[in-house]
Amino acid sequence: MSEHGFETLAIHAGAAPEPTTGARALPIYQTTSYVFEDADEAAALFNLQTFGNIYSRLTNPTVSALEERVATLEGGTAGVAVASGHAAQFIALHTLMSVGDEFIAANKLYGGSITQFSTTFAKMGLTCHFVDSSDPENFARALTPKVKAIFVESLANPGGVVTDLEPVARIAADAGVPLIVDNTLATPYLCRPFEWGADIVLHSATKFLGGHGNSVGGLIIDGGKFNWAAEPGKYPALTEPSPGYHGLRFYETFGDFGFAISCRAVGLRDLGPSLAPFNAFLIATGIETLPLRMQRQCESALEVARFLDGHPAIEWVSYAGLENDPHYDLARKYMPKGAGAVFTVGLKAGFEGGVKLVEGVEIFSHLANIGDAKSLVLHPASTTHRQLTPEQAAAAGAGPEVVRISVGLETVEDLIRDLDQALSE
Amino acid sequence: MSVDLAEDLAPLAYPEDLIRSILRNTRTIAMVGASGHWNRPSFFAMKYLQKKNYRVIPINPKEAGNTILGEMAYASLSEVPVEIDMVQCFRGPGAIPGIVEEAKTLSPLPKVLWMQLGVRNDEAGLEAEAAGMTVVMDRCPKIEYGRLGGEIGWLGVNTGVISSRRFKRI
Ligand SMILES: Cc1ncc(COP(=O)(O)O)c(C=O)c1O
Image 1 (cartoon, rainbow over the protein chains, first blue to last red):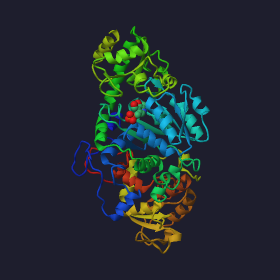
Image 2 (image 1 turned 90 degrees about the vertical axis):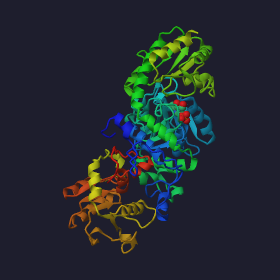
Image 3 (image 1 turned 90 degrees about the horizontal axis):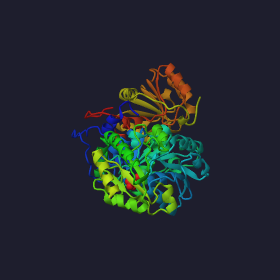
Image 4 (image 1 turned 135 degrees about the horizontal axis):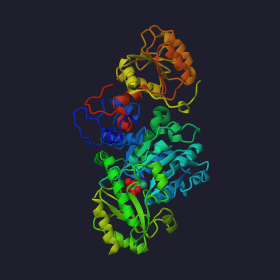
């Protein structure tokens, strides 16, 4: 990371003043395409032989400001913004794998990711082995010669589960595969997975990065340290001549940001989920206040979690910020500034209790998102995790009695009062 | 010691000011290993640098006597009839000691010996430094130019540049 502090980078990275007009806010380049200087320059651009913009499915200056900002905050070499967090997972894994390849993922993931990996990826000939991530050795046990990546969430949605990144990174490095960390719930303010050995970081920017519940978006960040050429032929998208670019090799040509360029120049070009410039503007603007929001939301989450922990209607609270939580020590290690603002509680009254809580609140919003300035509640068993089998749901921390809470920026006493009235109705 | 992959050694870090001053003060680059093939990185790096007003002279025995991007190619550094500010090595680590030996015999001595992205030879680098050259290893001048000038930010690359100034200059 550069010598600047996180708060400075959150505001300035990627967004120097626009040189022609001097505009200081990030301009929204609401354009599909860019005029070429001449035919020769156009050809060089299409062949990735010079730097410049062609078409906004590939690059857009508003979007690239966001990409550089998040890459800087994570301490990576480059970023690629895409239309959603799921698109980030799709493009990143598609770049690493071909039909018949396999990867290993933690079983404690956002429910939508479990569904994406186990059904839609399977249809494309990509196999995901899910393992219980509470024992890092389970990743080593699931390795096969066809495994091309290991995937975890630093702080898992919905459960308040912290992944022990260091040993998992060691297992990935020993196996010669990249560790991909979805850092959505922690954000680089709380946790920087590259510092623990991750190779690729992904985000659903829809959540805390944007922070206001107004834009769906995703990011892929290249850590720049993985040696794609260590085993010849293992990652052909990086090391073999690219047919779409007259034999250009991404790793040879772009070095420590070759993975990001491959995700963009092949993934975005051919699969197409680019981010709209207006969404990039909103997310990049949101990031300017990320440090302040995360700090306050973590503090409030801890207060709300403490209140619920002592509430007679609540069976358990799973928040790694509570001293008695099994993930407390991991949270202290990997995210010392706070354990995030999303956690789950188990209702004594089970499924019915969960439904009653989400229907009884008046300040918390009952909806399927997290990381908004507004506080949110959700009953995963009846919504985000309902596609899963009961076993999958329970393993992912989304059993029938579970309610997920995302603490926002409202006055914390109001939040506590709101939950109290909904629980005692 | 020469290695095939720069990644096997501790990563190199060059101060931004050093790279900036090299790119500012260089006019003529002798590119050892320049290819005449339009789709090799050396060819399009040369083309890019020409657009940024550098003079790039290709050095490649296989191309000697041919013209690449309007410049006559020479078989060796010593045949170049003009003053060379920087020797840029588009060759594997094993070829670097020979290039350094030849560069040392030039008069005036080139100010910079630059090894391309993925190329690193620490021993030959020290040798060149002892002779009075500034050495950069495992970097691409095109990428560094694009990074410091902001162009590469369009690819989402972390340029490391934080500035509230209006004009970006190399
Ligand atoms: C941890 C995590 N990863 C990925 C996603 C998917 O992101 P998106 O909804 O932006 O596609 C989500 C969304 O809930 C998430 O919470």
